[in-house]
Length: 207
Image 1 (tube, rainbow, N blue to C red):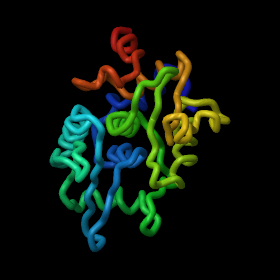
Image 2 (cartoon, rainbow, N blue to C red; image 1 turned 120 degrees about the horizontal axis):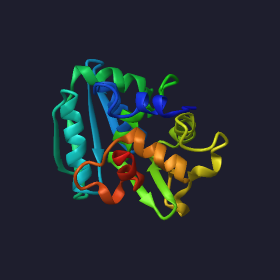
Image 3 (tube, rainbow, N blue to C red; image 1 turned 90 degrees about the vertical axis):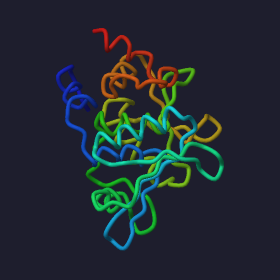
């Protein structure tokens, strides 16, 4: 578990240079990655709001990866890269056969957390929810453990894994200290995201 301001700053989204591995944050939610002939891979994610798609495309561009914003078959914003060799390592790490799986060595730092939040994080009546992939149930408990290791839920944590009746599948983050930590790790809200970003981010930015 992280402890102290210095460690939080070290792991925050703004503390290190963007890298391709950060895009694993999209896969923590309902993002998908597919490989082609073990030579290249394509990352895609359907979002429910245009600001999410635009922000994710900008995050990809910061990592030297061009992503187009188009529409899914259902009419929702879709962010999609081309097949690229530099995405293959991410695809291999997050795949177990044809199934999405959380890599054993995956650590949820601020950059990956920010991308997860951009893809499908949302403020809730009590705290914040990081939505999980309903088609990849095997990733839910491993991701809950990663969120716990980042100091965002209690060590036991199981009560913070929400099912469909509670607006999930999702990991719930609650409490003033954990919300402040979430805001510091994820950094400032991009344009259009304010309504779905932790309210504590304003206090963190001003401190």
